[in-house]
Image 1 (cartoon, helix red, strand yellow):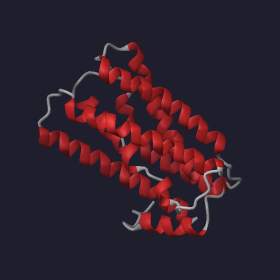
Image 2 (image 1 turned 135 degrees about the horizontal axis):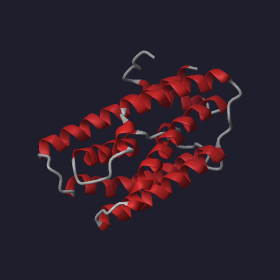
Image 3 (image 1 turned 120 degrees about the vertical axis):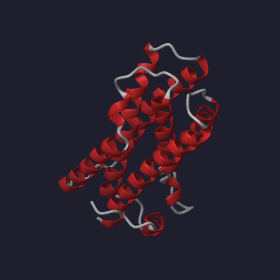
Length: 206
């Protein structure tokens, strides 16, 4: 895939102003979002078996169940494409998600207040804050459309979780300077922003 243009989000807004997501667009979006949410749920599942302070545990415990719930809701609401090329392309994108976000590194170690745990919180904060699909739809987008309704529910929950995750990133005691923390958060945000732009490029150009 070539690097998408920087104005792809405005292009997506113009695209959705003309048509709401059909089966191809829904499939791209659903596969991308559900992969991120289910991978995160798999990572979070190990929290249940680890000693961890109560405040981060209660937040991550809640996030674990919400990720599963919202992914299931989205999959149920999706009109699936009959075009095999759509699945081929979104599979390539999801492979890129694994590689660019370096998700494998978060599966093996236990969570401790260190740099790796902070990186994980930063990448998930990026997923919550950068992937904003509902805001790309026109103001009159019908909430009775079950796919749009599912995206709305996801973003309402994301907004709630962002505030808590921001607090964790700010208050968690880790052996990192404030500049190092800021650099990690910005780097992870840029990784997610690039992946989201690539999704929108698929949606708008096919």
